[in-house]
Length: 288
Image (cartoon, rainbow, N blue to C red; front, side):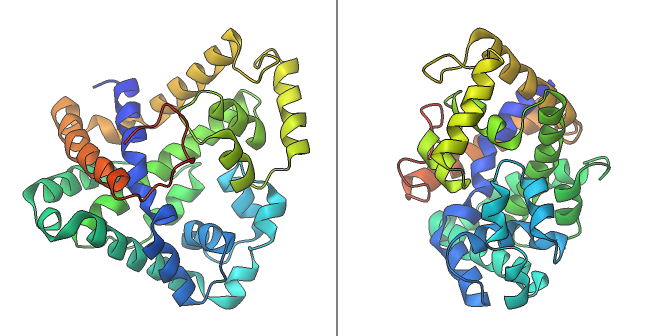
């Protein structure tokens, strides 16, 4: 198992974590806790583990969202619901969503229990919190006990650990949040462009200006496609991100990663089959 292979496993399994953003049960639990409809559930749900932080902190750690969008919801969310209660509601929502989608047979299966153990082994092997603020916050959240939640929690820790390192790489190569979003969208393996722009809160004018900056650097062509240097830069970003995130995955070895990927891919496919991820969200490189 090398860093790039582990990175592919991580990216494949990320969508299991994505239940917390797309499943209706997750949103309903946050609304029931007292949050307002709309983007507040996303921003508060993901950032609550950090405590009652400011909108600037959320924008910094999430990176590719328009700070003006974040400021509409944070810190207002904390005046409605304490962060600790938001965290608890998030787990209730994920629990309900996975119970519905997976069903009793999968929830009780040895496959799921094995996948949860493997993911937990990797997550517990994360070496340190240094320079990883979102991971550090989530690492303080108590571990659940049900296998489906153990799996989700472990993948969340691995995802935020990887994401913190990814932001460090983006800054090193000089890509702002919106520039990183545009260039990643252009690879076809992330969100579709319109979904990415609107969900991240960027105007058409801001998007066009950022595309112009990427074009001036020779990273995009006139139609918005990545140039050869642009593709090389995105490959470099993913390569270094994989290296920075490799340590916890390495403890599983080839066999452990392959087994986790096998079970996780079946769960991911079920999420797509059950319509957890609506049409028009992901680019052509993302399949169930």
